[in-house]
Structure formats: structure tokens, C-alpha cells
Length: 278
Image 1 (cartoon, rainbow, N blue to C red):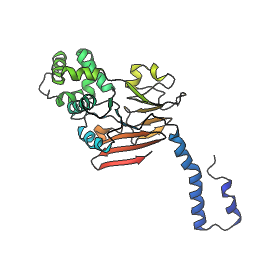
Image 2 (tube, rainbow, N blue to C red):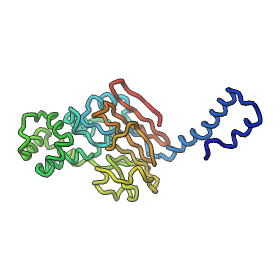
Image 3 (cartoon, helix red, strand yellow):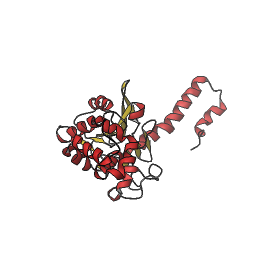
Image 4 (cartoon, helix red, strand yellow):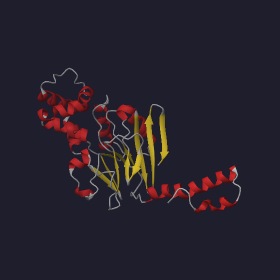
């Protein structure tokens, strides 16, 4: 639709005043922009309201600031990447483990690629040491008070980390699901292949991404909420809701409140809690 339309025709035969022009512009934008905003999320149909929280990366401070702003009786889905880069990975893992196993809150903790790297290091230290330690693993070791350990012996480091974590936490982390679905909304860490069914995704796609994700709208009507890829602002594009605002580097943790037909973004930062209607 062209920017200027036949709605402007009445003005061509009369003197245009400032008030008339202002009113016309308001009507023009009301007729074009607002319906698009409504249509943009009108097909969202989760079975109930829920929250999805972006990548934490050890930011316990922002997590503890954000959680009290969310309704306790709504499911809360964490998209993964709880560890590495930030200073408090151990504390974040323990809090999420508690939320999932001991609290009344319905918490769903998905696995991210950084959890996958950590678990890979525990299973095969020599294969995974370089990729994990160079992507924030050293900060995770420090959060478990493993600062004086000799990194040149990856097997000893892995054994010490397993002992510091405890087998119950290791087992819990290993068992984290890759996706969670409510109605026509699926939450995943990194991406879904838009050409494949939700149940037919490769693990590597869910954890690490897919080149067509966000570029190509799914044909099955399924919405996707994800983290992994840092965005300046939470965004909606091609039925994809992106919520990783890079907490470990921007000091801003973002969640999405997903309800039938609507999305609200909630961000925790050192300035407080901010709400924004998508």
C-alpha cells in the first residue's frame, strides 16, 4: 500500500490548515500501523499465559531482580545458557535446580549450547576443554571455587568440577529438555529448522541454530521463542520472538510474557524493571 493514498484527495480542493494536516496524519497512521500491530500477534495461542526468560550466563543479580516481577502461578521457561561468562554460574544453576525440583513455581529449564559444552567437558575433557574454556568455562570454574586448579590437566579439572557440582546437579543438567511447547508456541534455546516439524528437529539445531531461522516463516503456524543470538532489543519477526539481550555484557536480562494474542517484554537492569508491550 503506498504511503499516500486517496484518503488525501479531499485536501487537494481546499486550503490545508495545520490542524487539518495533523488530524489527517493521525488518521493515516491509525488506519495503517495499528491494525498491523494487532495482526502481528493475534495468532499467538498458548494454552495459558507463560514467561520465557533469556540467556542468563551467570547473572544471578539480574535473575533475582526479575523473578519477583513475574506471576508465581504462571509457568516460567528458561531458554538455556545459564553458565559461563558471568561470575555466578554455580549460584544460577543451584537456584534453577531448586526452582525446578523443590519450589511450588512451575519452572521449565531448557538446555543451551553452553550447558552442552559443560556436559561435553565432563564426559570427554580433552575433546571439549578448548572450546568450553575459551567460551566462558573459566568463569564457571571460578564460580565453583576452582581457581587454583591446574588447567593443563583437563581430566583432573573435569573430576574436580564434577565433585564441586555434585552428581544430582550434573544429572539434572543432563536431563534438561531441548524444547517446551504450549499451544502453538514453542520455546527453544537457539532455533528450529522452519522446514521441519517441531518434534523432528536435530539437537544441534535446537542448541546452536539454523541458517533459515528467523528468515523464513514456518508453514505450520507454530510460533518460536528463543535466545542464543543477542539482539539490541527484544523483537518479533516471522512469528519468532527473540529475547536474548546479552545480559552478561549489557547488564540487561529480558523475559517475554506470552499470552493468547499478545506479548509483553520485561527487562531487568540496574535501573530497575521495565515493561514494554510488543
